Amino acid sequence: MSPLHFVIMLIVAIIILTLLTLKFKMHPVMVLFLTATFCGLASGKTLVDTFAAITKYFGSTLGSIGVMIIFGAVIASGINDTGAATSMVNFFIKKFKGKCLELAPSLTGFIMSIPVFGDIAIILNAPISAILAKRKKLGMQQVAPFVNLGLTVSILLGADIGTVIIIGLICSVISFVVCYLGLRPVYAKGEYVAPLPQYTEGIEAVEDTNDVNALLIKEDNTPSSGASFLPLLLPTVMIAIGSIGKLFSAEGSAAYNFFNTFGNTVLALFMGIIAVGCLIFGRKDKVVKKANADGTGCKLTEKSSWFEIVMNNWVGRALQIAIGALLITAMGGAMGGILRENEAIA
Image (tube, rainbow, N blue to C red; front, side, top):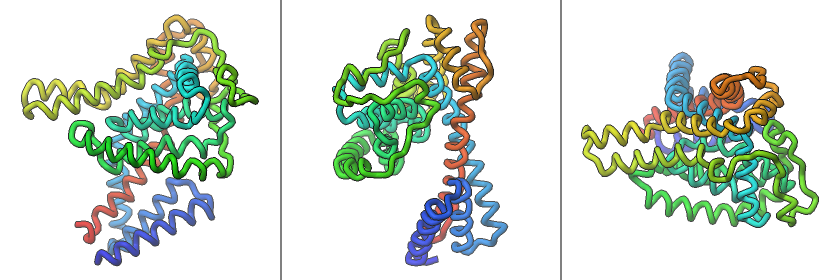
């Protein structure tokens, strides 16, 4: 296939994606599957070879990011149940004085996007984004695009903090500022998209959105803002230290092996789970009540152990939160794999 034919195929693929999503209201997983099938056939593969490639890349993508997305969703469940999300939201409301609150989760996601896989950061930011949107009477169409902005830039640049931190940060900052200033008015006029109800239970919109004190969410026994941010910052710092440490260590050396282990994404996110689990202490009744209100995990009681709350209820609910992201990402990986196999790229 010539480069021109490849470009034409991509244009047709984009049209198919758009029509199936907007016109026929199909689920993204099926949209990506059908588009990947078209790309495979258009590249000269047989139907059987196309399906084999989809299966292969779907599995490899799922295997590479599945555990990380699930762990990220567990942290998100814990942040919501312990009241950490409320503390973080109030922190941002105070810092931004109630203005431009869509920047709060956006900047959090921007920082996390440098060392952390994009889908994880989106899941971790979901409770903060939803609560801020509900409180400020913002639609998710005004918040979500800017949360994704920093993540998308980082992913497209392949911005590993240890290798391209300077170039990546410069390009990311410029892209973020330009897109935010240019697109903010556009999204403000878009069709209203309501925040997810599982993150906004008991959260009410504020009539006077210019009153900072009114915007603050009143909730008893919430952790401090520093403790609340720890489950998000700890994995980020561990991955960053590991990545930078490997850059300045000889491969195969003891130092390299240490940084390679310390900065492992799965380990870092698991430590994030432990960190958010520590927020249960002193507020167990609150956590049990919030977890049961979700209605999707195992039923908890006052006698439920720490392990039952974190490793059962939170994990069970996390799987339900993450399943969509897992399947969509994996099918997107399948489509990307087929495109990479095209001779026009090779």
